[in-house]
Amino acid sequence: MLFLSVAIVIWQDLKIGLYGYSAFTMEFMITTLIGYAFLRQRNRVEADSALKIERLEEDMNILSNDIKEKNLGVHSLEEKLNRYAMLKGVIESLSTHLSLDDINNLVIEESVKTLGKSGRALLFLVDTEKQDLMLSASSGASRIKTKKGDTFDHWVLRHRKSLIVEDITRDFRFPVDDVEESKKIFKSLIATPLISENKVIGIMRMDNPDVFMFTQDDLRLLDIISDLAAVVIQNALFYSRTQELAIKDGLTGLVVRRYFLDRLEEEIKRAAHRKGAISILMMDIDHFKEYNDKFGHTSGDLVLKYLARTLMSMVKEGDIVARYGGEELVILLCGRNKKEAAIEAEEMRRTIQDKPLTLRRHAATITVSIGVANSPEDAILPEELIKIADERLYKAKTKGRNRTCSV
Ligand code: GH3
Ligand code: MG
Ligand code: MG
Image 1 (tube, protein in one colour):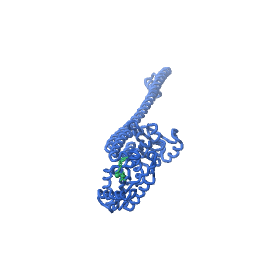
Image 2: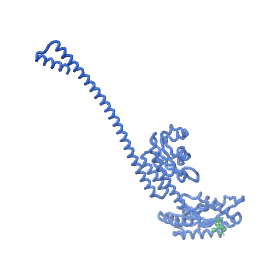
Image 3: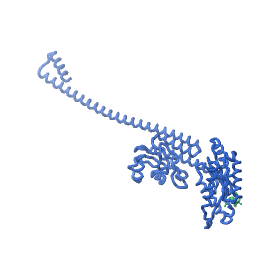
Image 4: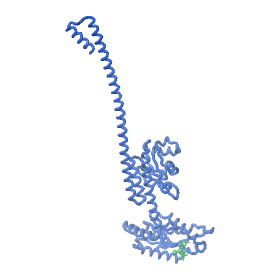
């Protein structure tokens, strides 16, 4: 550019005949100066532009990072919104159920759905009598060894607060032996207490075979679900306790006569449908009035409690032991014919007779008389079956007590 300008000026001077040594020198110097000034200006402009471009690029980077962060924020907000919308669903579905089993299973189902995490989900309820944990519902677990909770669940129970463990092998709050056993099944977990009326009534827990599978956000959500679950489970417990009180006798804990009669009708129908059999044993304490007179009414109550406990420990699952009235008990034996029922009745009678009770520091022997009746062998209708069992009980009494009559 510079040389082109010098050439043009010299060419024009040559054309008009002005060209001489001094003129050439002057022109050359002026042109060189102009050229130098021009070059400096251009370099400056170029440097300015490069700086501006650099700054723009920096700004663009910052903006694009900002956008990325905002996008992440929007995404996590969307996720949060989704999760909270799901929580609304949890509240609705939990409030429509009343049975405790249904609620327990639903709590597990909704927790897994809301958190969207794989692995196991376990719900333990506190057995208030034993002050122990009991596994009440689970998902994602084929076989659970620790039905009474493990070291992590007991930590939550003891501390009454939520727990997150990202890697159980690196968390030194827990005994090494327990961790060694647990790490075969899971490596990370979250657990929250279910608190109602200031008492821990259960533990909700999720775990996973991999490390770092749960976030603080997951724990917060599980906390919310646990709070909801605690209210609903407590309600269900109250409800089932009220129902239990209505069907259970306060002294012995056995079911009452009305409940027994309802169940007897059902069981007779069920047995008839399967072409099976059921038997009933009508049992009465011998000379009970004498015990009361001799040892007092409170001791008599103890005899009744002892008798109830003994019989409950001898019957099979599905059988029913009821307090029919006063010191008269009735036992429903499912699936047993008369011969089998008579054998079991004799076993009960002998067990009671063979175990003397200490009443007011005196050893006292309790004996019972039993009447056996079977459906369909003796009767089909419940009231008839009871009448026959009662008649045989009376027969056992008149024959000298402490015996079983089945004919
Ligand atoms: P047996 O049946 O052998 O003919 O004589 P028994 O003395 O058992 O019969 P009875 O019907 O004369 O007396 C039943 C007694 O059972 C009278 C009553 O005080 C007592 N009894 C009924 N319910 C209870 C109770 O809840 N607690 C106590 N301690 N006694 C009860
Ligand atoms: Mg009696
Ligand atoms: Mg009686």
